[in-house]
Image (cartoon, rainbow, N blue to C red; front, side):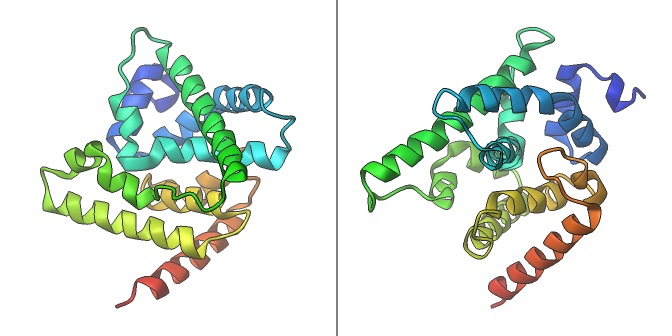
Length: 211
């Protein structure tokens, strides 16, 4: 069997989309992080001269979007040629950045305007229902993950919220180990640091989800 490093870009994406293979995800991040980071930087500079912390947050948002809904975007990706994934990731990263600045601008224009929460978007997204349709276990897992994400949004507030949510879902949904997560360039954490965040988040989630 070919190692993950020797897989084509398309095969690597398919493997990550269809499984929780930690090594495959680590290879995906290693291979495509420069593409995502460059797209985020280039797009953000159209809006302002972004500080590094903002760039890190936007990069993490892009990875979160890749992981959302059992990797729905990766599973729906249809390559036109062997290098299509690079353009796909550039567009996706650019959209994350544009969405951030548009939301920021809208917030400044009209505070108090009702916004759609993540849970509401998930309920209205037919792709979520289709993914879970064949299995009661899948439905329960979707509900549980949605509940956990809502708890994380409440209890993991602050400037590090996005980073902590990304760590939690890479660990519990994608199966990466703490040491593998610590190698991600955008996080700038040690293995102990990742383990500490996971322990704290797990404790908070359990306390908020007890009946």
